[in-house]
Length: 250
Image 1 (cartoon, helix red, strand yellow):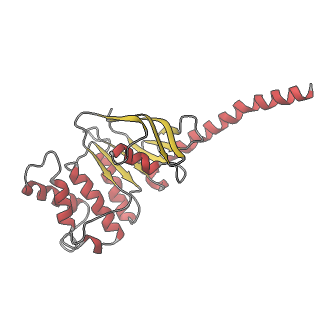
Image 2 (tube, one colour; image 1 turned 135 degrees about the horizontal axis):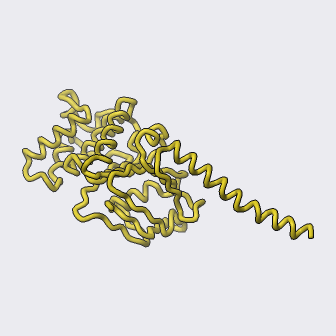
């Protein structure tokens, strides 16, 4: 077990996003989180990351867990460059002990993200949306010493072109499910990304009795299992309707 969410409840003003929601993230899982807009997908991810506190329930993580969070929207200090941003993030990594080590780690992560001398020292705010997304991911990976145990991503394919998405897929597949037993959980509307990367999909919705529907497999398997689930509900309710009709005619 890497992370366990037990009886998580979150309410904003008069609206309850989810109540008594339970989820366990196991080593090696790549979990895609889907659901209707406003269901609380991003909020749940922030609760896992410790950014937002739940109104009820608790989060328990494995001892020494290295978890990193990639927000949907990137934020960088004015005047900062990719090199300085990722180096600063690397300084917070547990395994990093000095600035030289942090610079080395930053260079490795930025290189993997495709940065080179033409943009590694550019002002971050001048970069395109796709490069800022790559920078946000590289920063998070540096915080986790390059190999986090758990990486949490909110709409990670936003602004990325096809090459960027393929790079992201390789990052998630390598970071999650490897020998080290790391995992990933991500919120996305990108069905192709779900199909390619997810080993488990959960849909958050108050339409389900437990607040979510969980299926192990990719997006195709999720759709198949969801259809079976909905058909089972129809079959369960059919005898009730027939019984009611029988009472009316007797």
